Image (cartoon, rainbow, N blue to C red; front, side, top):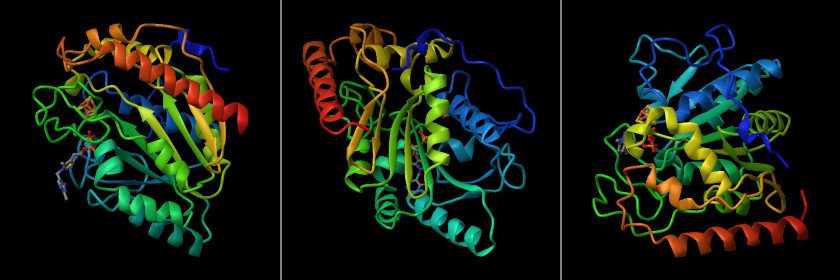
Length: 302
Ligand SMILES: Cc1ncc(C[n+]2csc(CCOP(=O)(O)OP(=O)(O)O)c2C)c(N)n1
Ligand code: SF4
């Protein structure tokens, strides 16, 4: 099991390894920026390159307007709903040309859990050779912070001013139900674990899905310097378990919650009004969720 919670994330100098170059307008403390750096580092380690398909989201807006871009690789800006369909076409062209790069969808939770789910499901059903990465900031960030089906209960957004009532959708279970070869959760507070998962995804053929818990100081109303600590707390308290699912059937847990109280996670983000989160229910849901994962990992080890 990974115990790298105390590791400091090394800075990646802007060089040929850099996917997201200088000149981007991502906010300070944005988890997506760190996720892109992790993808870049893994590509460099694996001696691979990629092409990106990015739907409407901060990932495409903050990279700059045509004809400039902060991305150092060929990138297609797709419609909100179509990233996985466009990536399927990019894979077909790659194969026709005899090329070998990774085709990566880089999408927010709105483009993944909600409006892009149909094309993602279709690509997964065809087992397209796509690495789909969802940076989950639990909000429609670049349009002002509306709720998505990834927004957790209790979170205040511009469309849930009193706090969201519904539960967060279980996107990993949805992807596992497609029996794709590899699905995993990723935390930017666990860089070694994240790096290994990117490399595993590169080594796997077919549809691969990584879900990055991606702090968004703008939407979470949190301190930019607190981003990594927050998502670390989410793993420690069981709010965001780290695990992998192979072929939709076999499970491997990568980090065990250490008993940290989720109350601290909520208290450090002003998106959670003090009375909006039912802490007893949250603690029970975390405990039961992890017990269920453990049962699956013991019965069907990955
Ligand atoms: C069909 C359609 N509806 C709405 C929009 C406006 N829109 C663009 S990006 C976006 C939200 C994206 O949210 P998410 O995918 O979570 O990414 P984030 O902005 O948080 O990075 C919305 C609503 C659009 N471009 N197309
Ligand atoms: S709004 Fe959130 S996700 Fe978008 S660039 Fe800023 S911190 Fe990142």
